[in-house]
Length: 246
Image 1 (cartoon, one colour):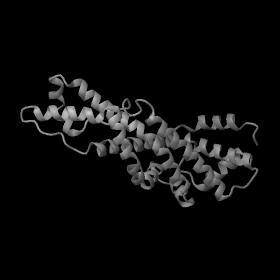
Image 2 (tube, one colour):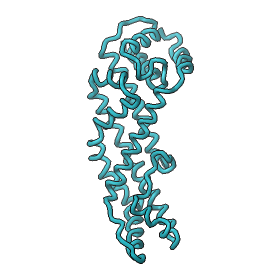
Image 3 (cartoon, helix red, strand yellow):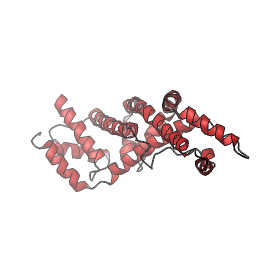
Image 4 (spheres, one colour):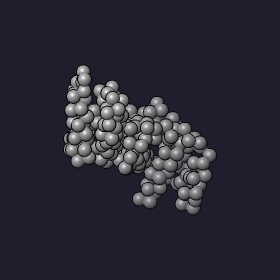
């Protein structure tokens, strides 16, 4: 039975993460039927077995998303999730560069993204906790819901906790990677310029919000891939992975 459940979870993962013809838009009956066909129709699947397989699949998916954003340059070199200069800095960016502060501007932007990359791994356990608490109805809603239903589920269940966990990590990390010092240097220079004023804003909150926005953006992109990948390749992959296992 242990082997059977393991195979089931793998089947569900392939179905969900590779965009098979069932996809996230399939009903529970289709998911069960597809899993049973891949297993040779040997055993009837209980609701508990189905939801456990889905949870294990989502664990793998969220872990992969967290890895993507937490690697070096995971935020910084991805234009879709890169944390940009705050608006107040953007307003004086050209002037700062013109007077020789371009390196400091670049360092500030890079270090903000480095702080986000360091905080990102903490999301894994929070996502997994949300998966553990997922009900059968939650799982069914994800499978039958909107194109971004899984992302919306994680946003609803984890955003508050992610804010609580990320913000102090971001604050501490910004000291280590030079965000705070870079910002103080830029702020002092901006204030010293003719008609200059403080760039004052909540830097910790800005980076935390940017980190979470990027994380959920990555989850949404992963979900889009899940829903849109061609079915033919998936069918071939299923045959290769499970050949002879029934």
